[in-house]
Length: 335
Ligand SMILES: Nc1ncnc2c1ncn2[C@@H]1O[C@H](COP(=O)(O)OP(=O)(O)O)[C@@H](O)[C@H]1O
Ligand SMILES: [Mg+2]
Image (cartoon, rainbow, N blue to C red; front, top):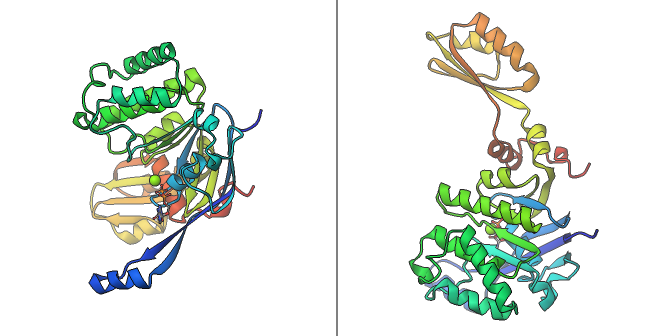
């Protein structure tokens, strides 16, 4: 089976003008603008099979939104190639547009001053959805998302979570085979985030929709995705199973100690040279293999009142990847 989404060395360089400070700067930038180039995406490649739900992660400004915009045909790449369901996204072939959808957490497509139902009616015409199918689909989506009593209210009067749910309905009315989700839970409260996650999981399982999801919330990704693609400064730094990521970079442990009384720092450092002492508490990061021996030595040689051993969480693992704590060549990309 051919891939649903393919990116080959996708690149995007934005050219913007730098505006000088103050009025003088503003005037100067009109007549003699300083052009600057921002290399937002620098040769991104990946391939996603039909029915996969892939997490697309990276710090702010990494190039996630730019990549999704190129894949959904909104932006022309500066270089490289992409295929979505076999189409070149930027041709914006009408047949492709009827089979994909893009949801952006920070940008709505519903008309702000109208009830969502009116926007849905326009989308129905745009996507040429037959009346019976439209009614059935809309009822189904409104039911799952508990929106029945919200769709006749002006969108601007809804809460952020309700608006996002309405956006999802709009994106799914035409049963897209590929769904690009850019921060769909951005700014939502924990309960709404959970509802949206459950909804997306349901759609993915029942309809086999291929999805790429970017999110700031690690929980979205860890609960929904098996595979993650991580991008930093426009370059893919990891592409693989979430479990591989956690085990490859999460093999350290954090030992936290509390002592019964003040101790001599030298005694602590003799056993654990990397430990940090703060009053009667200390913490140290060790590899998984040495955890047991070190913990035993600390317990037997120092007046320990309490000890805990913690695994780094996924967020921490990814933070390390970005801050260069983990050499990039071990990220498994080149292997
Ligand atoms: N329209 C634009 N003009 C100029 N620079 C842009 C534009 N959009 C994004 N950028 C820059 O491109 C880089 C990647 O942005 P973006 O794709 O939005 O990242 P992310 O979604 O991962 O936060 C950033 O440095 C951002 O400032
Ligand atoms: Mg973004």
